[in-house]
Length: 337
Ligand code: NAD
Ligand code: UDP
Image 1 (cartoon, rainbow, N blue to C red):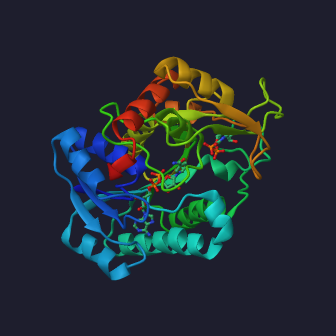
Image 2 (cartoon, helix red, strand yellow; image 1 turned 180 degrees about the horizontal axis):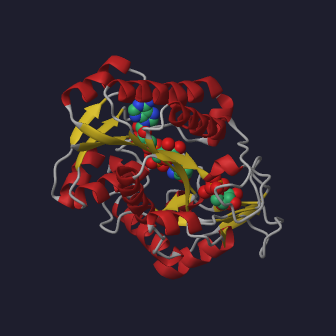
Image 3 (cartoon, rainbow, N blue to C red; image 1 turned 30 degrees about the vertical axis):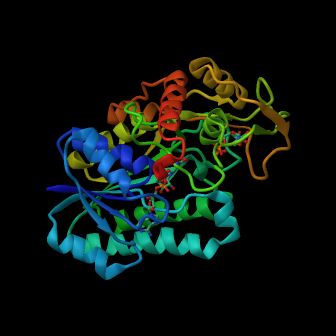
């Protein structure tokens, strides 16, 4: 029996594959490499010493996807494949809805046909939107502010309707907070195309000399030092959360929603200071205007994942900075090098 990981060549998917292989699962990856490179899979195999099966397939290519289910005994699907850049989703919403929603519908219809009824789905804290108060618990009000977030919310609703139509589904929806860091081998990590949108890859690129300085987006937020606060979570802790979710859906049917975060918020300035102290690199920065659409603070109440999944985030902000830097230093040009 195998676990199908869609988007398994991506940042979170690659770390999840490592944890699955280390735990003894057989892993099948489906990825179209729209935001990843196939060399990632060689690195996963070399870290774990175990092989995985790859299908270079787009979820929109239904027949090809069905072929994967025809020839493999798939027990459960961890569904990470999706487009994730907020700005891009605002500029090109139809592309985002088609890729994320039609891709998911294809997958679910094929799963239904082949009686594979266990899914772990990658959602996001973005579904809590700007309005709710922190910390966010799973029953905080939901309101996404952009097409990317709405695609996540729509998929959550589709999965809810699916479960209500057939209670024999086993579904775990994971709402990630801010994944950062890299595997401690320094061999896999986050490799954004072009200029990174997110804070940690941007800091790492400044540290390695690929960017001159960091712009801090807003210093007048209602936070202790005026810069934005987020719940950064080490990607390996996050990957381990998928295994806990898998254990749960192997035991009980139902649909469940879990926040995967540390429960602690850190400001942009705190992250910069920690990165500087762990790595000894100087990170020049400028205080600039707020980024449109940003919120002041966002962090998780992760109690439900602790109680129901026996999962807690163990790694600290210092671990996150150290591992992000090791990855960046060893791979200054990402996977291109
Ligand atoms: P990523 O871009 O590194 O990985 C996504 C992978 O999916 C890529 O390898 C991409 O090539 C693949 N993919 C995209 N569309 C596909 C399609 N139609 N068919 C086949 N493969 C396809 O992103 P990530 O950071 O690893 O995120 C994984 C998931 O987690 C995404 O669904 C994302 O929305 C969600 N998420 C990410 C974050 C974050 O900050 N990284 C936060 C919350 C949620
Ligand atoms: N941020 C910043 N400069 C950057 C990138 C991000 O100041 O180059 C800030 C951003 O305004 C937010 C925090 O860092 O307060 C985290 O941003 P990121 O894009 O990583 O996550 P998100 O805002 O999507 O939670």
